Image (tube, rainbow, N blue to C red; front, side):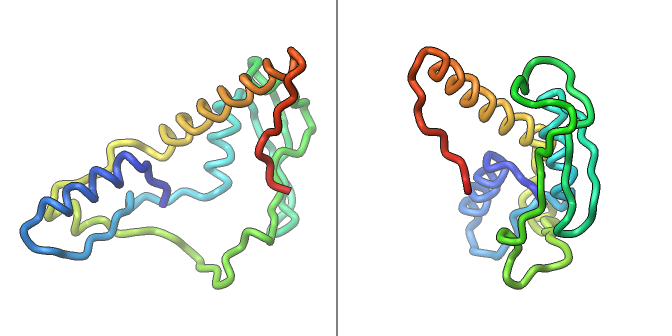
Length: 148
């Protein structure tokens, strides 16, 4: 259940306007997989991915590149691997919220789709990466936050 902070803050504001406190689920009610999110991200960068393997052995490799948004990548590069370090200790089969009470009571529905949110996130990260590349090109090799 991927949702945008703008929608969730709007929902919180609507909750605070009520005369009586109630518990609401803040969620989109729409479910997408991490694989779908990775695929959307790649598409925003002009990449087509090919997934292979399964479970902890699954990887995504670049199958095709269109445009110039990912100049450091080549066809065949691995761009995603499953890392068990990021599994939840008590992993659940599905994560999907039911916002029907918020919709029925407050008239709240999310306005920003997961795909739009993904595009916004990629655009922001791409801008940061381009800025870093420009600084590096002119001798200012500043650290970039990267997880090890």
